[in-house]
Length: 76
View 1 (cartoon, rainbow, N blue to C red):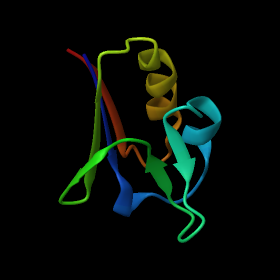
View 2 (cartoon, rainbow, N blue to C red):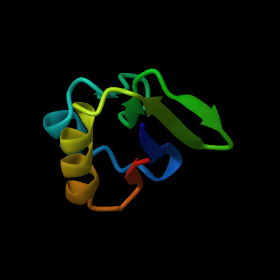
View 3 (cartoon, one colour):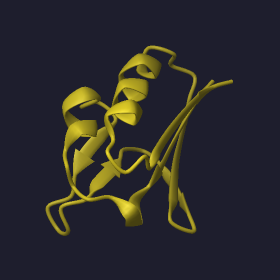
């Protein structure tokens, strides 16, 4: 299982995550911050749990590129 977490309130809107993992991230038109698609919110931490291991590489690239380090990716 791949677990991706986004701490959205600290997002600066750089768009790297969308460029590197467009199937998992979008930029909000309302506030210009990243949105983790199909994620569940728990106190500002948006978490996506997926059995599709294909998303791991793109999400990991997005996490490494994030200048404020608010994306974490785990392969459980």
